[in-house]
Length: 293
Image (tube, rainbow, N blue to C red):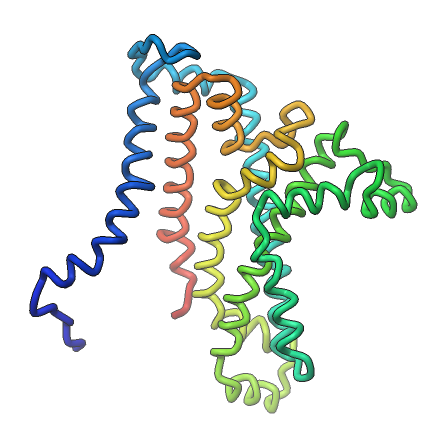
């Protein structure tokens, strides 16, 4: 039985958590409440007249083909970004865990991209794959592929997926590397003595022991793909061509700040928040069962 830690003075405990509570109230609870309130209203572009419309903003959204198309784009983008970022980071972490000479330099170079802002990451990859001057587009043309993310929706979606994945690889790498270094070497050495191949050792010993880290990163990467990729999309494609890269979080901005449809934008933010909360609950409810702590 574990002894429960109790503060002798409850006031101290409340004072310690007060800054975090204040941040949560100001930057999450209050904006979420405002979004819920505005989602049942309709305002004119000049903010001179407000009308209560109930759930009509939500009904209008689910009958809008462009909004339903954003669901499909977001699903493809989030799944691809999460899969590429996590698998690449795991591969790099396994390789870094085996490096002896120059390990510090190798790890530092892999961590650097995490310091790059999403918008800057988008601009970097925008120039690399620029159809006119980009080195990436040049080599693709040499291989026979005419890359043009200005005209091709598929190319544009691939571009923002690469940029978002590259931005998130470093974050995943840090946690995977820490998880690998926490695994007792005696277990791996014992399996090697028993004749297990490196691949079998990875799937039967290393990867199951990394399941808590993998589960945590899965939740974080899904949230990243839904919310924190706005800067990448805005800096590279601005949701185009057409609406090929207009993910849900970008459509909230486009309808609210560009289209000045504040009621629809607020309703979209409520739906997006509900989707992310639902996905997180599902992950904790079903996927966590497979996690071995």
